Length: 352
Ligand code: MRU
Image 1: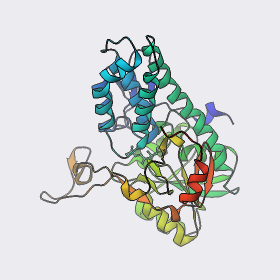
Image 2 (image 1 turned 90 degrees about the vertical axis):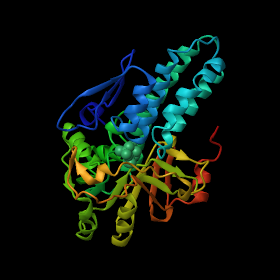
Image 3 (image 1 turned 120 degrees about the vertical axis):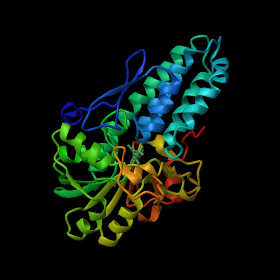
Image 4 (image 1 turned 135 degrees about the vertical axis):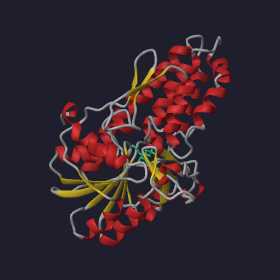
C-alpha cells in the first residue's frame, strides 16, 4: 500500500542529539514540539503524556537511556548498565501499565550486558532498532488485521493507537489504515475517550491528516451505535496482553467489549509482541494506573465540577480474553485467545 499517503504524522523523532516529541497534551489546537535533552526530561514527558501510547512510551524510554548514557563513563557495557540503574528505574516508574516501557528498558540493558568498549554505539543502535522494528510490525499487523474484515464494514476504535502512539502507522489504527486502503472498511467511528480525549483530540485529527474521514462519537454512544448495525468490528490497541489473553487498554475498552458481544459485533485487539507479557498470568495481576482527579474535575485547567467533589480516575481497564475475537500481533493472529492458544503462539519465544 501507499504508506506515504496513509501515514504522515511522526510523534517521536531522535534528531541525533535530543528526543523531539510532538506535544500530545495540546493537539490538535497547537502543534508544538518538546525537545528532551536528558533522561529526566524524557521521564517527565512520559509521565505528563507529552508522549503516550504503549509502543511510543517504550521507544521514548529507549532514547532516554541513550541520553542518560552521556553522563556515564564506563569501559564496558556491563559497567555502563550498572551506572544506568538509576536512569532505568526513573524511566520505568514514569507509567506502570504499558509493558512496552519495561520491555524496551530490559532490551536496552540486555544489549549493554554483552557490549564491549563500543557500548555507546550498541545502545544507540538498539534504540534505533526498537523504533524501526515497531514500524515494520505495525505495517505487518495492518495487513493481518485487515484480512479479517469483510468488505464494506464499519469499525469503531477507542483511544489513539496510531502513528502518534507508535513509531508510525499504528496498531489498531494501522489495521484501520490498511482496511480503508483495501476498501474493506467503509466507515470509521472513533470514541472520544474521556477524560483525556485521545479519540477526540488525537485519533480523528491524525486520520484527517491522512485523508481518512472518521466520525466522532461520545463514548456513551457506543452501545447505541452497535445496536444500529453500523459497525461490524471494534478495533483497539493494548497496553499489556497477559499469558491468558486478557488485555489491559484505555479505560472504556472493557465496556466496549461487553457491548460488542451483546450486539454480535466482533472485537479485535492489535498490538506488537512488545506489548505481550507472557510473564504475567492474567489481567488481575496488572497494575492499573490511577491519574490525578483533576483530569475529571476540570477541562483545560478550568474546574468544571463543583468544589468539594472527589473523583476516581483509573486510566486503564482489563478486558477478559473471553470477550476478544482476535488478538493480532506481528507474529500472527490468535483467534478466541485463551491461555493455551497464547502459549502455542508464543511457544519458543525468548522471554528473557
Ligand atoms: O494513556 P495513553 O494515552 O498512553 O493510553 C494509550 C492506550 O491505551 C492505547 O490504546 C495503547 O497504548 C495502544 S497504543 C498503540
